[in-house]
Image (tube, rainbow, N blue to C red):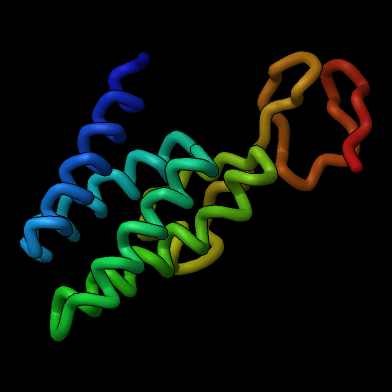
Length: 131
């Protein structure tokens, strides 16, 4: 297991544990940590897990913690389509949330593993066609 995956697992475990102990501030901090790692890794399952824990926190919390949890749900939900499509964006997490930026979206060709533009219909390296 690589370092990011290990950190993600720890963050989600700690978020769940803190939620069970009704320590919502700590739970949201751990969930944000996991969410940023999941978004950086483009991990669909991890993003869904973060959305689940953040929604549980949001449902229990009030005030600032409720807002922070709702923002995390929104952020991970925004990142999920890219993860499902295999598209990586090189912008910062907040730039991804705020909208299109200066760096183009990219994806990895499943045949040759080269990085190509997300809008590409044909891989310029191996000729694979995308649906």
